[in-house]
Every structure is written in C-alpha cells, then in structure tokens.
Length: 73
Length: 251
Image 1 (cartoon, rainbow over the protein chains, first blue to last red):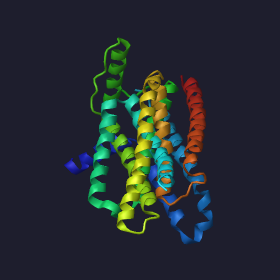
Image 2 (cartoon, rainbow over the protein chains, first blue to last red):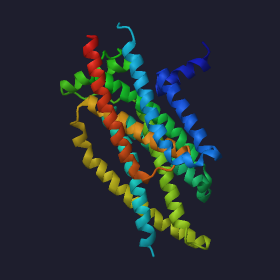
Image 3 (cartoon, chains in turn orange, green):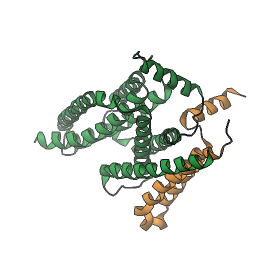
Image 4 (cartoon, one colour):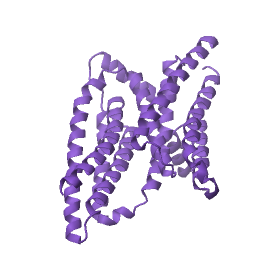
C-alpha cells in the first residue's frame, strides 16, 4: 500500500469511516448543488432544503440499517 | 453615527460567535478542552494572519466555497457521531476500537475522581478549527462591510472599520463570558447524551452552512438553525426508539 493510499484511508477513517454516509452525503450534495445551479429549475430552489434535510436523514438511517444487519462478533 | 455602525456589527457578530462557541463548547466538554481550544486558537491565528496579509481585499474571498467544504465535512462528522450515539442509546454492541478503549479508561478515571489525561484529539482540533475559522471569516466580512459601507475616502474607511471592530469585540467578550458561565453546567450532562448533542449540532450547522455554500437561501436566516435542530432532534428520538425495538426483536 503506498503512502498516498494509506493517507487517503486515514483521512477517510478520520472524517467518516462509513461508506454509506460518505456516498450518501456526497451524492446528495452533488444533486442539490446541480439543482440549485440549473437555470431552468430556478422556481424549485425554495424547495431544495426539503430535499436536503430528509436526504441527510435517509443516509443516516441507511447506515444504521447496514450496521444492525452486520453479523454479531 | 458611531452607534449606527457598532450596534449592527455587535448583533451580527454575536450570532456568528454564538455559533462558533456552540461547537467549541460541545467539543471541549465531550472530547477535551485542550484539543478544542487549540483548534480555536489556531483558527484565530490563521484568520489574523489572513486579515493582516489581505486587508480589505478579504471581501473578494470565495466564502460560499468555504461554507460548502466546511458544511460537507461537518455533516459527515455529525452523522458519524449521531450513529455512534444512537447505537449506544439503543443497546447495540459498541465497536471495540482504540477510541472505545480510551473512552472506557477515561470513564473509569472519572468514576474514581481522577483527572483524565488531556491527549490531543485530531477530530476535536479539526472541528473547532474549521468552525472558528468559518465564523471568524464571517465576522471579518461583517466588520469590513459595515465599516466601509458609508465611507467615501480611505481615512473614513479606516475609521469605519475601527468602529465596526469595536462592535465585534464587544460581541466576542459577551460570548466568551457566556461560555465560561455555561462550562460547568454542561459537564453534568451524561456523556452519551453530550455525544448525541455534538452529533446533532454538527449535523445542524453542517446542513446550514453546506446548503448556503450550494447557493440555497434559508427562509428564516440564522433562525433556521433552531428549526433544523428541532427536526433532527425529533427524527433522532424516533430513530432511537426504532433501533431499541429492533434490538428487542433480534435479542
């Protein structure tokens, strides 16, 4: 493992350490960012928080479901 | 004339300082004060150096991009902490990692009435640093904006910035005094409840700043933070209940 991969892994574990949370929040921010910048979707902008907040909560619930389905040690 | 600049700067800065204080305090109480204050102090040094180097060109910095990055990372930090707190509240087995071992040792030391060693914690330093840096940047923007808004000449601008700085300084003194007063009562809150609170605060502030960075305007300005906190709190309570029922079924 190179020092770059080790560094990235350490950073990942330090910041989040959970693939569901990382992918969920990243996809959500990218989607909301794209919707917020699309000129044709300007009337939708006031409703974007309604997408963002439940999206964050759904990501957390997804991670919890994964955690509770893990086999016991 | 002076008060028309000092009062709005004081009020606007007070909101920003309270937001920074919230993060610094919850991190200080739950992790340790050494790490939290080191992060906050480092942010103040970086900010002071940036202000000294850039002067009024500071207003050209891309604050939205900075909000987006800090917000995104805080949401990740917050969800990580919320997840851990939920699993502990609901009785799911905690992961026995280095952090858990340290926490167990710290709890045992506290139970014996001994002092917990104040080791430096990367999460605590980084979280305090980012929060104080972001809020500090916003205060600098406020001071520069209010201080230079009505000035026509360079001398007037300098005088305006000095007067506006007075408002920000007063706000800082009020918030530091508030922090000192709240420090003791916070230590009486149970540990897992405090960690839950940290997760809730980080997710709330992260959502707020991240969305602002994405170009979303919140309908009630900074008051939206309270709405977000309420929503996340209510959903958290329901989720903990669901996890407890799931645990009871699987047992």
